[in-house]
Amino acid sequence: MNLTFVRKYNRFLRKTDGIFTHNPLLVLGLALPLAVIPSYGMTAMVAVSAAMLICFVPTVFIASIIGKRVSSPWRVILYPLISCLLLILSRSVVQRISVLIFDTLGVYFSLICVNSLLMYSVEQVLPKKPLDALAFALRQWVGASLVAFLCAVIRELLATGSLWGITVLKDVPRLPVAQMALGGFILLGFLAAFCRLVHRIVLTLTLRAGAAQNENDLADKERSETQK
Image (cartoon, rainbow, N blue to C red; front, side, top):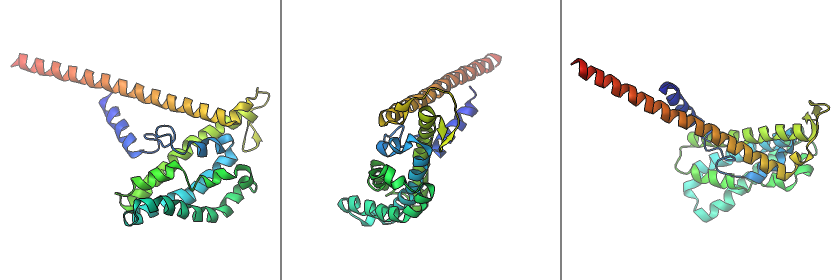
């Protein structure tokens, strides 16, 4: 493997921190119920993702501005409260996606305001500048949504053969367990294992490339000394 590719890969990981590296769901295991339950189908997952964009991202941004002025015990109360107020505002947006979505998911919408991803993120942005905190929050949201969307597509196809209520796969055996919580957790586990496998393969090839490069450098050095 060319070392140029290795450098590009490392730069890619740094720039996509929170999306393809340190993913909040696959690597950190944050807010898993919030991703597993709604990802039984595309409609529910889009609704939850839209609500998270409205609630989660601004709350983390606000935390970067006022965080150091608020003592630690009060943060646990303040940030969920801010997120709750934003969740009320997001209701009209979410209902445009699905009128009955609040009745379908119920308490899982409330988890947007109180979950491990939110509490983790508001603490992480305390030393960051507001714009850096906003970028961090957006990467966390994209990383979580990307994995949840993939789960929603796979689970809906396996269980019903459709996407967003439109039949895509006809005369294909159905797997109803895919839309159960158990199916969601199992799928997330497989995705996490697959991503780690890919990363491990790249790291292995990187080490081999580094070793080959060192051997070539050593051989060139020996040839130059012999010529002298």
